[in-house]
Image 1: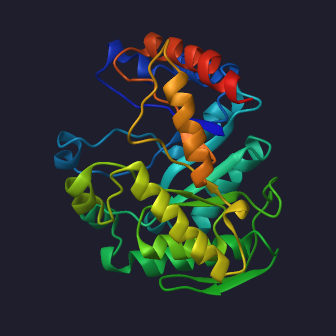
Image 2 (image 1 turned 60 degrees about the vertical axis):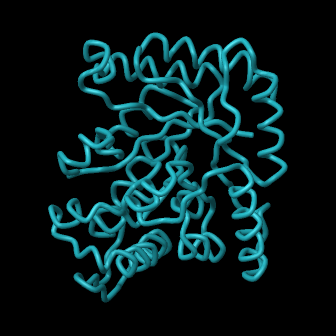
Image 3 (image 1 turned 90 degrees about the horizontal axis):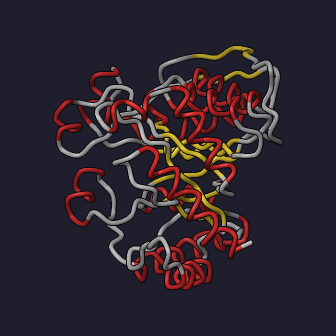
Length: 305
């Protein structure tokens, strides 16, 4: 099992510590020292106030933030979880992703999504109803520009004639591409070409309605969807051994000082096909989050290595 922790972006919590560049460096280095395998940032460049007031979250530009953390670490992998692909011209997206990959010496995992906030699509001038077509087009462009020095493509809203990208990614043949979301379309994409799957868990009907995806409300439902994904992979000549799955338990949470039941649940998740899980650190106190990462490293991560 590998472990990922998200770096929260919080303006009004703990006297601004979560936005202090020195604190962010300390957070990333503490994660690395605790044995955590990856640090993630998410992506909402233009959310609505309504969404933020209703439980949404602040963000940095994920590529800027990951590049910043790359300079402060040496082993930690840098992850988007996730980046909304249709928001950007795919060649600009390729440049951002490549820049992080080069500056981190290949320590990248990019989880990709189609997005769900209609107001954000409108604010960015992107047709919400085109999002799946734009997503599939962008993936073709990413893999294409990373595979040739003379790339041409006739896109829906752009035309590339002999474009190149230099420097090229350090990762071979290019950075790992995971997919986020729970829909059949997402599972089919993972089965055909994805390196990993990061489902959205919990939230019930409210989350499902907001994100326009299938709700996963229990560990049993998660295991069932992983079995479904395994069947889809097999139909494409692949298997669960060819991909990663990032998920947490919906029945058992980590309790500092009492790791045994959580470790048992991790074994069950691994048996179902989960290869990565997220580290719960809490967001109320910056220094408490650091302490929790250290304790998680001692009690959980050390027991799995």
